[in-house]
Length: 413
Image 1 (spheres, rainbow, N blue to C red):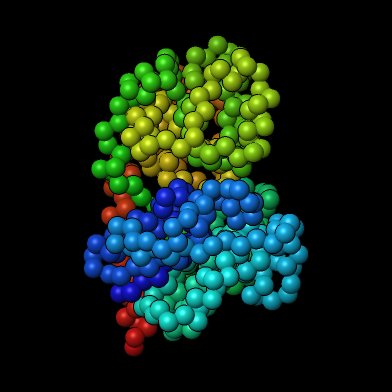
Image 2: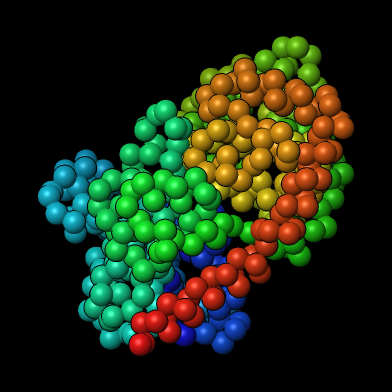
C-alpha cells in the first residue's frame, strides 16, 4: 500500500496524536508498505499563530523509512484575530481552513492537485481542521479511502467550553464523510453516533505503549539526581489550566498544610498562563515543586519507577497515554471525569477519577493513595495487567492494518 498520513506535527515533536502517527507509520514501513507524511514545520504548537516559536528547518527527510514532507506555516498580520474573522465566512472550505488554531499551510493545500498518488489517506487531528480537510480533498481527487483520527476533546459533560472547539458543524461534516473514523474510547464513539457518524464507519482503536521502550527505569537514580526524599506525585504533559495543573498545585498545597512530605514533579512544556501562575506562588510552595521541561525517555522511565502516583486531572485529553506508561510500572493513577479519561480509567479498579476543577477532591484522592499502600498496589497492578493485555502499539497496529487492507480492497472493487 501507498499510504499518506497527514498530521499537524511529526517527530521530533511530542504529543499523543503525534506518537500515534509515528508508531503506525514506522510499522507500516517495516511491513513493506510505503508511507508519506504531510505535516507542518512546527515544533512548538504556538508556531501556528506566533512568530519566534520553535520550528523545524528541514522540510524533507526520511525518518526510519518514512518519507516526511514538512510544509511551512504561514501567518497573517495579527494572525489569531484574522483567522477568527475568516473562520466565520460561510461555507465548508473556509470554516475548515481558517478556524483557529488550525495551521495555515497553503503549499500543503496545493498538494491536492499534485502528482503523487496513494492508495489510502489518514489524517489527524482536531482542532487542526485544515489537516483533515486536506486529507478529505486528496481522497476525493484520487478516489481513495479517507480515514480520520479526530482525537476529540469532549471536556466536561456539563460544560461545553472545551467541546465546542472540537465538534463544530464543519468538523462533524468531515467525520460523516470519512470512510473510517478511528475513535479512542466508547465515550468518543457514542458522542459521534449522536452526531450522525454511522457506527459501521467507526473503529474503536485507542492508544498504546512499547514495553521495550519503557522498561529499565531506575527510580533511585531519579531521586538521587534531584535529591528527592519521600513520596513523589508525578504529572507528565503540557502545563496548562485545561490539563489540571493549577488544580494539582492547589491540591498539593492543601496536603502540605497538613504536613504531607510529598514532592510534586511536573514534566512538560510551560504554557505562558502556567508560568505566570507559578511565578506568583510563595517560595515555600515553589520549593516543594520540581518543574522540568521535556526529559529523555530514560529519565522519564526513572521518574515513573520513582513516583508513587501519576496524576492527570485534565479536561482536554481524548485518551491519556501517560496512564498506560504509569500502569506499566504498576503505579496507581488519578484522572479527571472529563474527555476520554473515564473511558480509560475504571474508577476504583485501576485508578481514581475526580471532577475537573475540584482541587479538594483531588487532594483527598492523592492522600488516599499515598497513605493506603494496599489500595495503591492493587490499583497499580490492575492497571499493569490491563495495559499489557490491551494497550500495546503492536496490538493497535494489527487492528489498523487490517482496517487499511479492507478499505483499500473495497475501493478497488
